[in-house]
Image 1: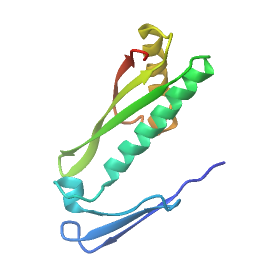
Image 2: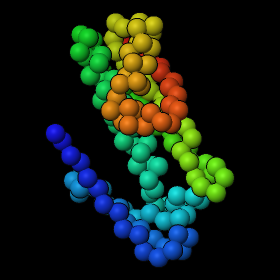
Image 3: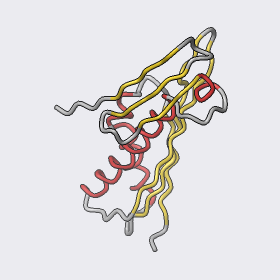
Length: 144
């Protein structure tokens, strides 16, 4: 079993306080605040970290699925947008939008779309976030 961890501290009240996040690996340490989460602050926020985790997991899983089926993957680029909306008195993540593009010589678009959709259903982060609707736009890039 693999266990990953991160830690967060928060000081003060919600609107005027500030916090600090740190990944267990030490690869990232940074601040977050009310403004970075709900306005235009420059620090990070939990939703941005979820988006990074989802984009990273999806890219790796798509590459693994394609490679495992015998395809040569030149590149996979994925972005994730996590929508945080106020629903009544609280906030909810209402949608995650994945966009991926891949260069896979010799693969036709129909087969690529199937791999892309299967990956959306099967990547570990997608599974963990399955309570939230996830959309996918997948583009097969022409081979160079």
